[in-house]
Length: 282
Image (tube, rainbow, N blue to C red; front, side, top):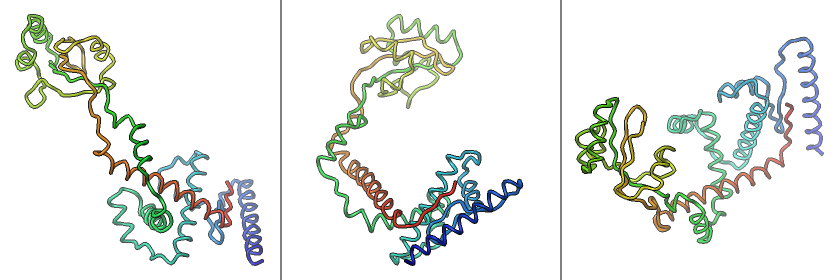
């Protein structure tokens, strides 16, 4: 009964505020009205504007405005749950320290600390990552399988067509690529022409096309690359960067735990929010 009276009182308050806002607009006056209510907590237009400004959000986007307001509502609910469970208040210093380390605002840092504590208490111990989940994730993530790659020697000559022509003549004459690179290349990797393995998909379109039919030992060039005349020699092809399951097991386990803990927490929080009177009026 008291809950019904409370909700009725809040509804009346909100209606009066909305009428005031409408009247203010009709007279081209800015009224600081209510944009949301969470039980006995009210969010005003000025609160939303301040939060938008703090986040650097575009003031003219209604979609973004709504998203920011929903985050503010969620943060109020999290505070209420956190307090109701008797958890220790987040100190200003604690929030400040996290803010400095992470780059987030002090307000967001405090919210993060409260959510992390609730996640630890409510869902973390309930999330179990099984062997099948680990293997399925490993088998379906291309970064663990490695990528088609080429290992290349490289010569880069900066804005010197005569020098590039001499290098090309020596390469055509069959001189060893490494020797020609040592004499003519303006850029060497640790004193060597060998630039290591490069994923085929990371090559420029021109170089990828030129390398398509080449065999180890073949030379491609001259090509224009960022102000340089470039020559490349294919050393070998292969799948590079593959990582065995045992090497990445802990990494995958941690990633899956975070993923499913967050999903479980968001589900739990959504259920908890349904227990509060929440009104959003934009």
